[in-house]
Image (cartoon, rainbow over all chains, first blue to last red; front, side, top):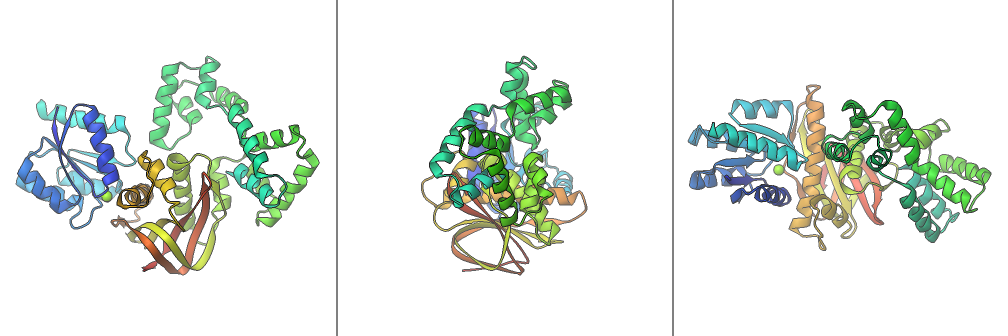
Length: 123
Length: 294
Ligand SMILES: [Mg+2]
């Protein structure tokens, strides 16, 4: 079981992700609706894992990822986004995202990738 | 897609009544069986394999038959056999109408020719409408002078069928100078192209999309339900931008927006695909270099 911070400007997607994660026994410790909120909450909560959308107002997910990794170089951040453009994937990987999942979300895929990242963290 | 459109044409021309079409649809439901079910019933694959394929299908925008062949569960011949069993919905419509003596085969042929002319299709389109795959049929409905817009709207229609309603009544694309939306959800793509994709309705018909996408029963257009429509658009834009990025076209996806009483315009006009989802009228909209005003 992991403590997870869910970041997405869409409340629909936050709800879907929360349901998927809680179904597997994880705890969604908090939610954020933009990058700035995400960075602030990350620093406050220090979650085991963060799911991070890219297209968001105020500060996008790539900007938030960089600030989170700056603060905690071991942060486990999984991008969960519709923005699967080549340059987005490369930017996120360069900034040390642990995984990149594209929407529309599929429960099996999401959970498999999250388990993989958590597994790696425990090895 | 063609079958719904043709049936709607018959109703508009008062060749069949709404009640008759409801009865036809009831009969179609009985005769329309999922490929997975047919394959299991024919003992071609196991239940587990069918479930696995159904899951894969949801995640990959691919057809059941193609996936089954790729996995080695079915041969192309077996898939053809199943498709024949399942029946083409247009042929089913024809069969039910003629079997119930609503029309003779000759009368139907004549109505079909009227349909082609009245809807601006060409004679050669008929074969595609009757027997073509979904992509080819969509391409006949979404035909504008702008090929990027054609691809954009076609992708959106495919995703409506995939996530919102498997049997929408989709009309041919129209271009208007200006468009006024009672309620609108939209999102812009910016970069190598300036595009906008949206869904609009006069009243609260957008709820049909909101509820289906979030798998939740919304009953008013508020922040929650608008958000669901916006996130559906975001997914379509993501798929489109991702696809184009493989051809080195760079697009950024902007945060979506929504609201009542919006006006849309653009130098090429506003592209509209009117559709009916469970009887609810919704417009799919694309604009190039578009402007949104209150
Ligand atoms: Mg977003």
